[in-house]
Length: 499
Ligand SMILES: [Zn+2]
Image (cartoon, rainbow, N blue to C red; front, side, top):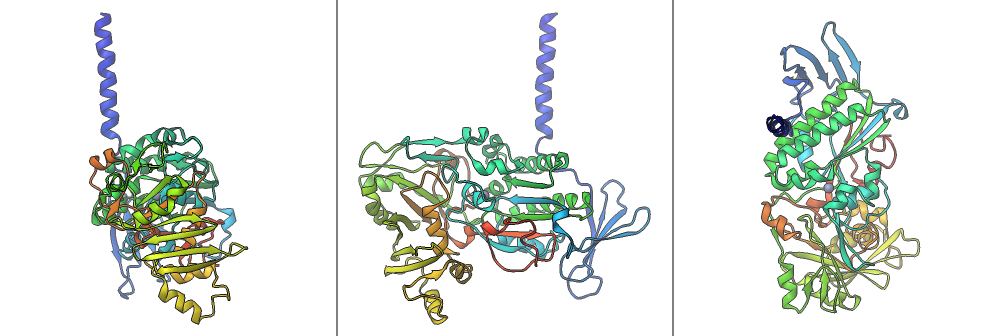
């Protein structure tokens, strides 16, 4: 009898797990589907979107762009009577409304702009570019965007300088130990799913969306901040077309939230960095360094030791070594296939070294003016821009240029905002600063060997290349189309809204 009971209990447990898993990661149920869109004034641009409930197929509501600026400004409900709401969100008091900020981790600007041009995400103004930080990895970029204290390292797995050992890793993601930006977020994907995302990317992604929607609906918070991490893992593993296809589910999700509030909320959606969207291969740094007499290890035991935390498969390496070895390793890395450049601190200045030459970045006493001093060659390929700045009299007698002038003049460069990004990258962001930061070319990555064998990487980020550095931001209000630095995306409520 007891045996039979036990069997029944075990069987029901197994059935429960199978049932839960079967339903876990299914698409978020749709409340509305797009039935028709129209260009009512025949100007070649869609201005009306008809939605119906998937259950009865009747036209339930219409979104209208009445002033033809591309963004929905009227909501019309047709059940039972026609009722039109103004959702233009211009000139309204932004402080009185509920606010929601959603980070779609790693979603590149190009993809979002393309989807918007195809008629999606039209509750928002057309996305603008956001220039990320260097290294363009989530922990660093999100700390910047959320104005959080420094993270221990560039990724979850990091090198603890004082204890001379690799620390953190998956456990710290789960326990949320000492990662200040996580404390600011109201929603983040539970750590356990961050690894699973590389094995079951679509299910994990859909579970992330569904979980966020539920948690948000249950929260009384006036300003809710969410980080949807699974968009990045999806981007890492999918072709650009597949990725764009799955992002359509975010369009539906955001519309659902928009409708729940009848458009009366301030919604900011952004990414923390971009993505290369090209397949890449892992740099065999261990072998490369061994040939030069160095050894990649988990702690610095001898003069030959080099520690490089290998975690996510990213386009940057944080290298830790004995101080005496830094210049030699920098020279070595600049000759390594796949390396774009390396940067390190040398007597208060940042030294950049690549096969294109060497240069230094110096700050004046105020810290607001920076100088790019070419030693030989032009590692950041900024010669043309420097000449332009000279002609425009933006360079002072000592050779320094305002930080925001550097930003404006280099945002579209292949290394966006390079001078500020490298200077801050080497000096700030983490408590355990690397001896050297090595930025890789698109098509190359470094990270865990085990992880590398597990997945086929179709995209990555982390480097200073334009692809990795360019994220997006958009809001459901009129926006200036200026390019924004990551730290300004959420600097104040409604900061993206055109003033
Ligand atoms: Zn990210």
